[in-house]
Image (tube, rainbow, N blue to C red; front, side, top):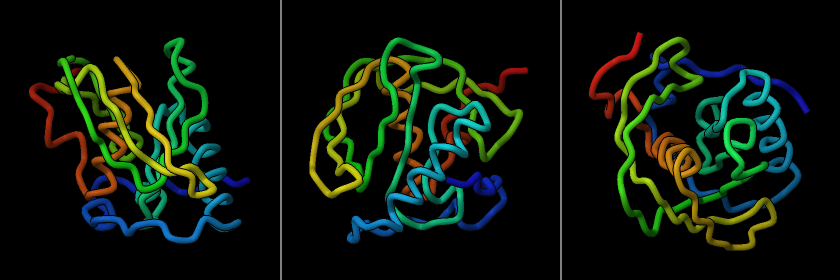
Length: 154
């Protein structure tokens, strides 16, 4: 595994829509492992492939250091299929270091995705996990959390 360079907010790659993953091979597994290690090295709770310069629909999330939910989650070709409730809280991004803002997101989110071997599954998360799913899936469509900030936090 390797720590990859995280692309920062002015990098054009972060504005592009990612391509569907079709090959569930060793190359994908290496990418996912590297993304997870990179995310953990920066104390993040989520990381999307474009943040490391890869335009593929792949996300890693782990909120277990912050909540009781989670552990390592990998979402390939994720699609949010249901949301409910609302939460407003502080959000940041590894591609926008040192910047935090208040963002409103759904409190409960169900996502349909594939695992690293291509098997489809559904996952429902609440609270921070729901926030992380929304945040990371938006990266895959070229969006940053800054688009949703209602006020910045010092």
